[in-house]
Image (spheres, rainbow, N blue to C red):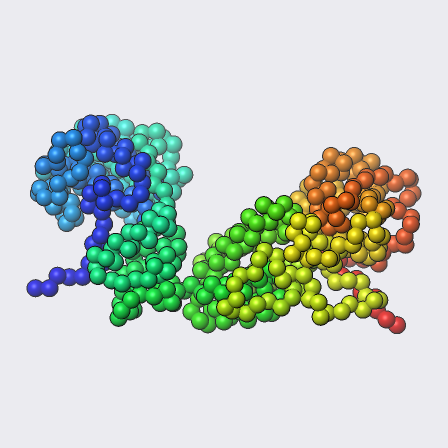
Length: 527
């Protein structure tokens, strides 16, 4: 008679405390309680999925009722009748309740009536309530008294992935242990051990990829390995793992993010289509773009590049929102495309694009900000105001990004460029600070940027937030440029050394307010 197939994550579920991976602190505390016979009447195991909560709860139940456990040790023998029943899922003294489907007050009343029954075989009767946060408020209230003072032969173990939803009255009656995500090294090591036990050959790159996609869940990782086994007749390769998991080629992902950050929306959509048609899973695509955005943001923070940091922060915020929505949206592809296009358009408006030629796969990822300056082969007509972004360059320590876009300190800036650059700078400020500087009129006097205010209230409060604006101004016009605040005399509209810019026309300002938009480019139309 052939033995029925058993999935790997069930077959290799830990049967002893020494076999547990990770969670060392929780494991030591629980074993200490078992050895010293100080097992509490109620426990709460909390943590993300696949971190060993239910497995540890079963181990605790097995060790409590083990008839042949060695004195001074917490390890169950796995040979006595009680241990075998727990391992086979047939133990009468271990009652597992799924709170997601038994969440009402009637189920809890039934439990309260049965807890008084004595154990059938072991010393204790153990109740494991899985997904405990799904219980209703009335069910929790009905459980409180029993949870606080249960019979001596009863132990409650509540397992949950959302401890924040457990009432404080319940938390106060339990000993809580937090189960943390496994590291990628721990997951890969466990997968390597399982593959060795099963005689499966797996490339190290494939194991690393599976561990990365599992996001700290051991159950998910072992499940992915179980799916990969039938795909290959020999060694499981990284390419096969990417195909199964829907993970795109890293070179394509690098190119996609470079194109989005460079403002090349059309090319970015074409690359996304190529990834999608090649079997890339959209959630993994979004996660890959998020990781690259986060890595470059860290570099921008280390370089103190305020401009690039603000743009990458905004992009990462949009991607985080997209990650939450993409799994629930009816048309996830359209949602991803729309978000990437919006980020690309905002990158152009912020002065990042259009870029130089983006390297094609399998080129290595470009350094942070590389390839984002305007291409050398594009010439700007003398009569045309430079495109949006020409006046807003990052600081000198990030010369790779938009190098050469800011005029040298001390040189006059054309009126149109100055206003455009100031409008883009306002877009990087927090809403509260932006409201104070919105009415300011910029003017350049040598190595100073003068901000003119019509009202004393704005003039006074803006000076209190000069520290928020100064780094952005220096990133735009150079480190040597200082900031000065001036209050216009009655009837003055700001600096008189230049005529009003086209975008300052009352009609244009009224249209901007009405449409809640902003002027991104001013072009002179030849007559």
